Length: 141
Image 1 (cartoon, one colour):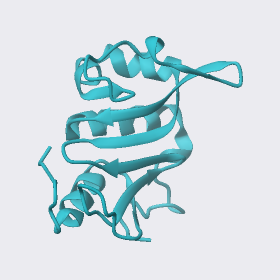
Image 2 (image 1 turned 30 degrees about the vertical axis):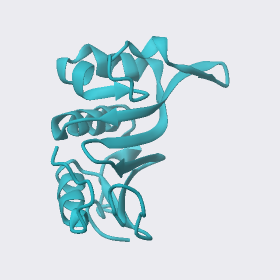
Image 3 (image 1 turned 135 degrees about the vertical axis):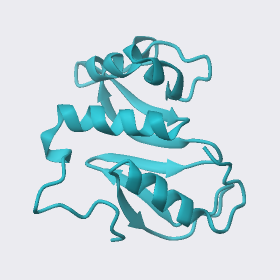
Image 4 (image 1 turned 60 degrees about the horizontal axis):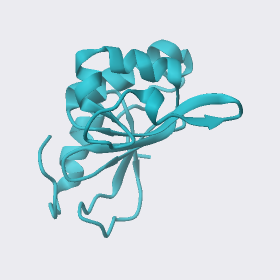
């Protein structure tokens, strides 16, 4: 992914990446961090925030789905559990929530990884797939 460190025009790149991957775009206040974005991605209860070289994704991914992602070669290297650069298996960093194991944070390093993550979620959660009622993917809210 393109380095967006300090890039004041980063929203254009972010909008393109999120739209290509089927993630809804939400406009908010300008971030004062290293990447001065005002756009974030939303997919159901998942939030996608762009950092310099990756997306930080927050949301509860069941261990079963996390292991499915990890079994894919792109998932194993580009969809990083809890941002751990040594890419450990999801089970090692899963958190117990309500008696079940979940991965709650990912760093996704490539657009191919972002697309795999989104497609996998949509395969498991039909409500995340666009319908006539929610075809606003890529539209600023």
